[in-house]
Image 1 (cartoon, helix red, strand yellow):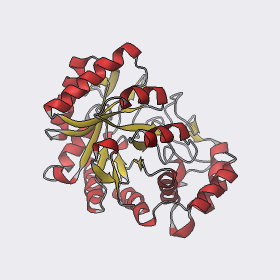
Image 2 (cartoon, helix red, strand yellow; image 1 turned 135 degrees about the vertical axis):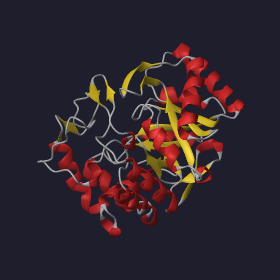
Image 3 (cartoon, one colour; image 1 turned 30 degrees about the vertical axis):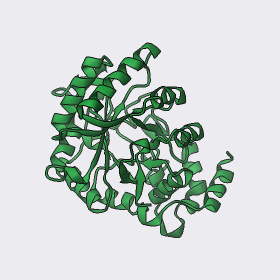
Image 4 (cartoon, rainbow, N blue to C red; image 1 turned 90 degrees about the horizontal axis):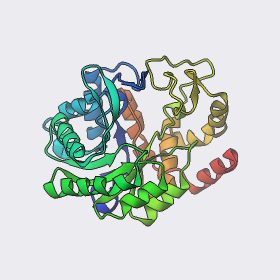
Length: 325
């Protein structure tokens, strides 16, 4: 379970990646918090170093996480260690780094290259391994110019390959027709399976990069009916698109669903977190979960899943029966 291919690019990556949204720290989208609360940059750097030591080399971020701050932290962490990491970042959203506020989306070809150059500077590198579109609402007439811009970045050596962060199979289809596309990042966890996207990625030799593999932390088991997430956290800020939480409180139905499968997830010496990751690996040979983190301790637990590997077919079948899918 230690290595997987980043789709048709052939780039070898760890079967587990690092989701770097949380280490971007606080920022604002639509007048609401879109980060995961306060962070300790020194701890974030220690955590990235620990991940590299444990064989986790895929680092996934976006230029909007902390309005550039996540990329800045990664750049510092990889100073002198760039050869040990495969860097994936994203583009589309722009904002003010001083006020930590996002203002909109720009998908013009000129902007895409400017955004790429800015990410390269923050990441302290001269190339990005995987560059991903970070916006769902893309008009059909915009897709080809975006792809042409990305192909030019490949030709210039600024990026090695590209993909789209989307849950729409039709969108993934448009990107997959270009040979330089190698990955689709999409939401997937035990509560939110994505059979159509997984099947599409398998058929088209694309990496299935799984964001929210722990259901925004829900699958770690740390939440109870009495838990409350603050408004400085994306889960408690009131965004309509955030699942599993309402008014900062865990949904009772999701707590019940987790309780119904927790014994299976925690079998064979796993933690709930490791079981949730093992479920994703068992779904397909193309899946690469990218759980988030804010501490060394979380990195150690997440990476511990590599030793446990995927759930068995019997465990997978039992979970499907319990969840009545």
